[in-house]
Length: 287
Length: 97
Image 1 (cartoon, rainbow over the protein chains, first blue to last red):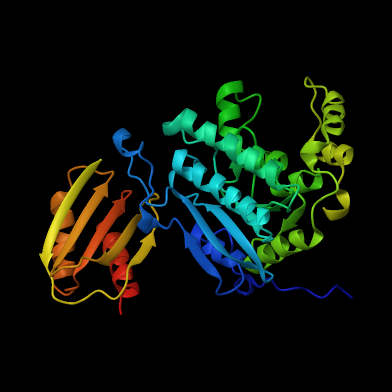
Image 2 (tube, chains in turn brown, yellow; image 1 turned 45 degrees about the vertical axis):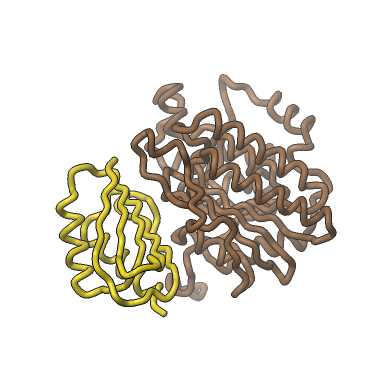
């Protein structure tokens, strides 16, 4: 007897990846609880893009909202990857940093607001260079300042992924949720190929790229905490589960010795294959 | 990049403001609000230069059957005329009283 065949049910799922940033925020918050902060009608767009011949977006590609998650107050910030590749300019980054500071203010007056970052970004916006980098550092500082009070939950769903300085923001999160389609890394594959050559990495080899920086590998090597299907309900459930599990005993970025030892064990001349790295860094039970 | 402005006479009140679309490849962002007077105004920022007449044609067609006193802002990232019309109609639908 063969095992019963499970029919794929493509229509039973609602893709999270295909949602816009604003729809993603709604999807993560409890139904009917969505109050946008600094909406497009506040016209807080980038003052730098137009003078460089780039059409701005009125929310600068970041959507902020207050609402509830599991009935608890929450603030969600989401990056819109369709606008300038989800790049972080001065305004976009400041909005995220301010959202985190808003959460800190809530906690200071006893309101247990939950912070969520929906990251879909290539990193700093090159047209705004240093201003973008400076504010990404503010985001990092704000995450670190919040972590002792409340878990900071990050989601990288794809398809852009999360790169550059914002990959550090993802790494600083207390809990990181990824899909198989998502990617997480410091330098994007195209950048590595351009800087180090085709011998180092063929950025057009999708299987290779995802085997290195894809959500499944990041989860299996312990750099992401939850691997979920590209499904609205699954992402929303993973965010809720992350808050229920509370703050980790030690954040990844507090385990400096562990990661230094792991890096010291790697020979850069013959780096481990993705499968070997899973063995060595192991988080196999969830993979 | 080019900025264009158009005006049309209007008579119908606009119910509420509406925001649709994204400034992404082949798409556009539309912000629609009550203009506060008896006129419709459209301000367009577009990445593609030299298409003023095409924008006028699209808007002439729209305002031949829509008479809302709306202030409309468009941030365009190379959308086709069909896409532009769809997004404008979507915004109008969402702004209905």
